Image (tube, rainbow, N blue to C red; front, side, top):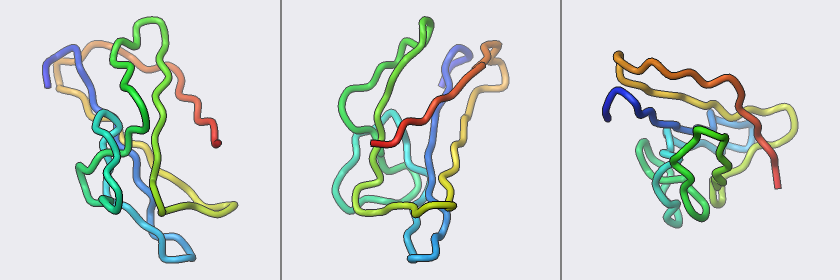
Length: 93
C-alpha cells in the first residue's frame, strides 16, 4: 500500500444468531463460504478511483445481521496518507 491508497474492511461481529465474519476485504471478490480475515466481500466490480465518489457493493454471503445488530467498517491507510474520507453511505438490498 502506498501513500495515496487505503483499504476498506467489513466485519460482522458475533450476532445473536451466531453469525460472524473476520475482517473481509472490500477490494477482493467474495468466495462462497470464505469469511475469515482478509477474505473478500466485494460483489461485482471494484471502483477504485474515488475522486468523484465511488459505489462498491459487498456481500457477506450466508452470514447476516438482524435488526438492531451491527456491521463494523475498518479503514487502513499508510501513515503518509494525506487524503480524507468525508462520507460513507450504506444501502441495504
